[in-house]
Image 1 (tube, one colour):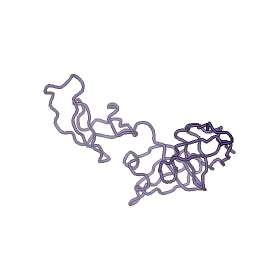
Image 2 (cartoon, one colour):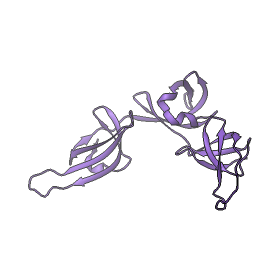
Image 3 (cartoon, helix red, strand yellow):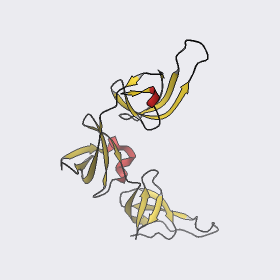
Image 4 (tube, helix red, strand yellow):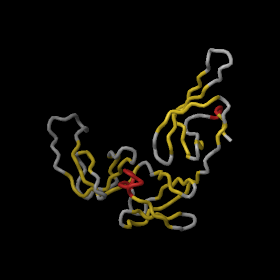
Length: 189
C-alpha cells in the first residue's frame, strides 16, 4: 500500500480502479486547529492520458496498480493495426494505430521497445529516444544570408514524416529522428 507520505513524481497509484502516474505533489498544512493536512497532486490517467488535480487527506492509502512492462518487437502492419511480438514468450498481439497516436509514425521494421500493460491491456509504448529513417525526398535548400549551421530545409522520410533537416542532408541518407518531438537528431549514413 502507498500512503500520501510516499507521493512523489513518477509514483503510480490506483484511483477508482484506474492507474495514474503522479506528476506533481504539494502538501498543504492548514493553520486552523483540528483541520486535516491536505496533499494535492497532479496525476495523469495511464488509460486515457488525461491530467487531473486531486486532493487527499494526509495518511490516505492507495493500492499500487498491477502494471507489467514487457520487451516487445514490431513485426509488421496489418491493415490499421501494428503487430508486435513479446520478446520472452514470442506471443503476438495487435495494436490499433489510432490507439498509439503520433507514436505509430515512429514504429519501424524490427523496432524493439517496452510495452506497459495493465490488466492485460496495452497502455503505452516506451519508444527509444531516437529512431532511424531513410530520407526519400529533400527540397532544395539555399544558403542565403543565414547564420552558419542554422539553415534547414524540409525533407520527407520513408515513413511519410516531414521534418526540417540541415542543408547537407540528401536523398538516400539515413538519419535519426527524436521520438519526443519529431526533430532531426543526427545523420547515420
